[in-house]
Amino acid sequence: MPTNTDDQLADLVRSYENAFNTNNARAMNDLFADEPVFVNFGGNLVRDKQALHRAQSFVFAPGGPLERISVSYTIENITHLAPDLAAVHARQRTRQDGADGQVAGEDPMAAILLLVAQRTNGEWRIRVGQNTPVT
Image (tube, rainbow, N blue to C red; front, side, top):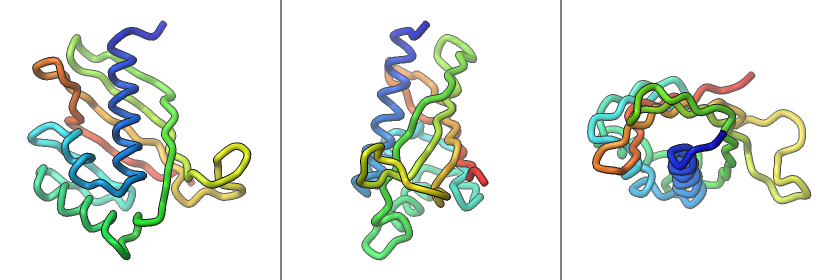
């Protein structure tokens, strides 16, 4: 049964999706805790919020690898680890124009996004994340 906490975590994922699809590195970076750890789609480990912002800015910049990519996230699981700590698994897919909004055939952006979110001062922030390609 979904909880208010689940709704807040779903909002966090929607905000992440919106930042991705609008190429807004600042908005995406603001979703992270002060000392995040993130493994990106390419397997690179980033341990610092400023370094993460540099990486996000690069991929979303004009000519960057994600500039023209749009994705959707579907939450598949939320695990409550503690009252203010949760793991969210969301399936990432490429968004396309069409009846179902999904890419036909093999999806080059298919992945499982894991976000470990921590609530501090009433705000959920991503503390640890990993974007694992699905092959």
